[in-house]
Length: 249
Image 1 (tube, rainbow, N blue to C red):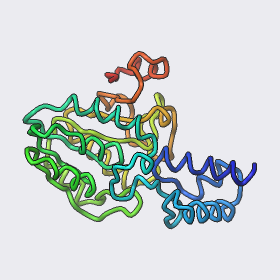
Image 2: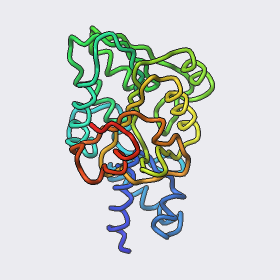
Image 3: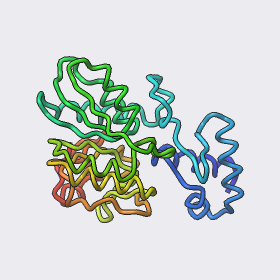
Image 4: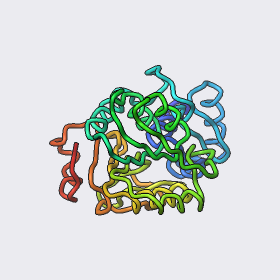
């Protein structure tokens, strides 16, 4: 495989899953970790990714930008955000995680919407503050340098004290058989707590994330209620998720 092709595949993996591990890329591409490390360094120097210890992050994990070119699959994510916002109603208590799609949801909220948001994402909380009629509660704790959300026992304990009407959660991997998966144990622990706390769980994902599996399971599809993608709910790709009982939007 040529270096250009390999780096193109690495960039796609980073953008789809937001964060990737050097060891996982090495196995997936069947090359040494040193080779992947050099590729990540070159991609970082070119401003295409954020290189971190042991892997890389998508540029979408930086502070939010309204520039379309800074956000992978921007058009698809705006479609998803619009669908999610249409489900919000005055008086709701909504738990929302981090990520570029949730930032877009926060950005396009109707100015007169009266919702109380709980979030473990500092960047999401800051974006939500632009909406004067919605209240924001940031659930703080140790901030994960890779996932950019609050993690740890304090966060899990705080989530045990609330009962949100709706949880809005992004995904790292989503599969009809494996369910929601991730590559970070601390993130998985917090997401499990979010799901347990909530009366209804909405998960959203661009179509490219469907049928992808990471190393650690968050939950099965039976613990979810709604799946939002940029696709039409009648798209054949979504048939297994419909058969699993999810409401498709």
